[in-house]
Picture 1 (cartoon, rainbow, N blue to C red):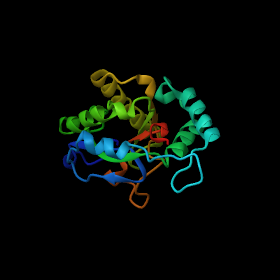
Picture 2 (cartoon, rainbow, N blue to C red; picture 1 turned 30 degrees about the vertical axis):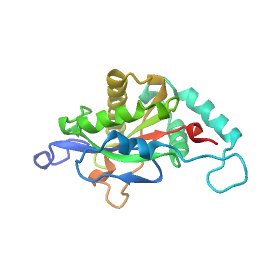
Picture 3 (cartoon, rainbow, N blue to C red; picture 1 turned 90 degrees about the vertical axis):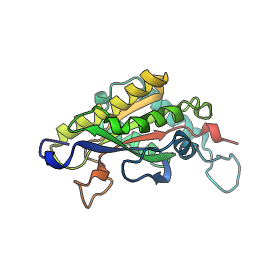
Picture 4 (tube, helix red, strand yellow; picture 1 turned 60 degrees about the vertical axis):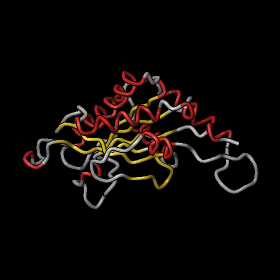
Length: 213
């Protein structure tokens, strides 16, 4: 968001933290959700290695994904190239996710007090033993208002804020949280670029090995 936004009508900026399989669960408004709801949505679907219904495990593809993720671990968000950001988005497209609404202070990367409970629920969910060893992508998005350069930086700072909170308050391994910013390049509602639904942080469970059979 930029200073072009009407300051009298918006005290905080709504962002969405996303973690889903194809069609994720969405919780509208400013309602905080429980850690169990987040955990249920994040758990990957069972993967099989034989000829059967459901997702099939491809060892070669999984190895390539793991290799790529290792190249972006512990990287500063702003250091990622456009090609790397696009590759992360492609890999994340079919992974488990859930929509959470997290508000940030106006034109800021500071988490609003009304959304602290949601971030805490996220921290509890990601700390669950059932997700141990998983890698999560934390991706920031903005609406279409303002310049590409400004929104890119803002989306990166918001993703970094979520990661920092999770590491400091829940002891999560920072190397398991890959942050990336997309600015206004991947709008959720392309027909209405200014819609608040576009202001979100996407968190995706990149690993499915915990559900393999």
